[in-house]
Length: 138
Figure 1 (cartoon, rainbow, N blue to C red):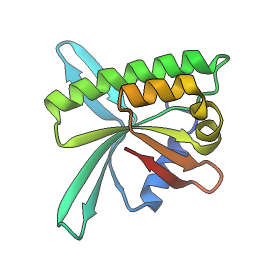
Figure 2: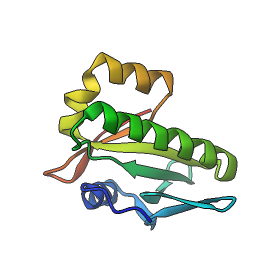
Figure 3: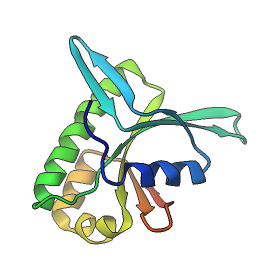
């Protein structure tokens, strides 16, 4: 199992503050002989529709030497996990969780916008200091 991301616990707390129940830590996927792990699985009861919304969340810090390399890794994981979830857990939606300073700096760059929009990447943006979710991007 991979090590927890630097902001794993911060994202977890932010989800809980937003009313989510953490159901899996990590959310395990098994494909053939391979085991994969998405950082978090969570559920939330939507009272208005009396339905449960289920998500899986991959947390990324973007603290490496190259933000482009971090992006390549994050996108690769996201696409792989998304395809597996769609097949094996179609009721669960995948999100990439990042902190707000990365969202407002690096993620505002054209190269990132091209990747996010063309692949329909869903993003959760959290304030690392307040440990709160500040934006959901569908």
